[in-house]
Every structure is written in structure tokens, then in C-alpha cells.
Image (cartoon, rainbow, N blue to C red):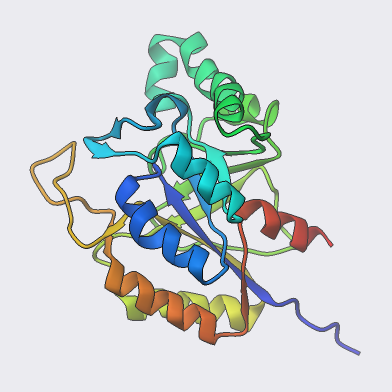
Amino acid sequence: MLKKRKKGIVTIAFDDAYLATYKNAVRHLTKLKLGSTIAVAADLIGKTCEKRPVMSKINLKAAMHAGHEIASHGLAHANLRKLATKNKKASLMEISGSKKKLARIIGSPVTSFVFPYIEKNRTRALRLEARKYYKYIRITSKKPYFESATFMDPRELIGFAVRKRHSVKFLNRLVDYAAKEGFWIIEVFHLVGKRNTLSAHRKKSYRFFMHIKDFKKHLAHIRSKNIRVLTMRAAVKKLKI
């Protein structure tokens, strides 16, 4: 007799912890009693990241108490591979130091680390360093990626970076596939709000933006499917059962 397939999982992740994303998306999830994983750079809390306001200590604590997971995103949102070529000690401190500082700020242990930048920190040395301090580690890819319980390594997780060129229909299809096959997909959002901003690196609009109306449409689709919405940490624990 065939073993019943596990129920699919979607993790909604918010990298950089933008204040606009908190006000528009995180609070909406909270109202629906759904959790997310918020990755924040410890030194930028209450300040700015790439010229955009970042969640405050109060915001982070409120989100945590509402069931959202707070993950480390380094100290200063640095490109760790580039930093390592100039100052190896500083690059390692981004990993270990951010865990301690963020834990002090939110008053709770930090078990997850999310490497900053898209597909720029795939170095063995950095990943090995992160393994010393964190149970759950993720990098972010431009391509959709599905995790399964069979092959899943909690310290080699890969999230999919949602960009403004991705339609709601496209994202819905990814969720449908995860639900059908019993897979786990980590959707990584950055700026979710009513208005986009300019990129900090080029004279163009920010690529990692999603309008709140589209986010809510996609979320409604997720909720209509036979799929669980879990934080990164909770998803790993569920898949290990």
C-alpha cells in the first residue's frame, strides 16, 4: 500500500524587515493568524536598509509575540563573500555577532540565519561558519526551488526571491505544485506596500517589490489550497516528524 503523501508547505519570508512590509503584509498575516519568517540585519533595526526604513525593536517584538519567526540577516546586510576577501574576521562576525545582538534585542534565542543578497553567498567557508551557530540556514535564489522531507537539509535551505515581474498567476502555480506534490516552497518577499521605491544600486525601480493588493490576492489563493503556512523553523520541525 502506498504511503500517504505529506501535506505541502509554504513559508512566507520577508527579508530586510522593511517597515512598509511590516505595516502592509506582516500585520495582515497576523490578523489571519498566519506566521512568517522575518530576516533582519541587527545593526539596522529602527534605521534604514538600502534607504528604506527598517522595523523597530517594538515592531519586531510585536511580530514575534504574534507568531512570526525573527531570523538573523547579518549585522549590516553586507555582501559576506565580498567582505570576506577584504576582512575575513568581519565577515565571520556578521554571522556570529548578529545572533547574539539580535537575541538581546528581541529577548529570545535566534536559531535561523538568512544570508543577505540573492545568490551571492554560496561559499563553503561562510556556510560552515553559519552551521556553528544556527539550526536553520537559508540562501535565496532567483529560481523557484522546492524542498522535500527526503532531501531537506535544514542548514542548506533555498528560498525563491519574488520580484515585481512575477505575476500573481505565476506565484499561484508554484503554490499549486507544492500542494499537489507535498513539497515545501519558501517564497521570499522584500518590499510589500502601496508604492515602490528606487533601487539603491541602479537608477531603476526596485526589483523586489510587490503591491499589497497582489500580495493579498496571492495569500487568498494560498489559503484556498490544501497547504500549510508555516515559518521556516516550524516547517523544518514538521518535515522531520
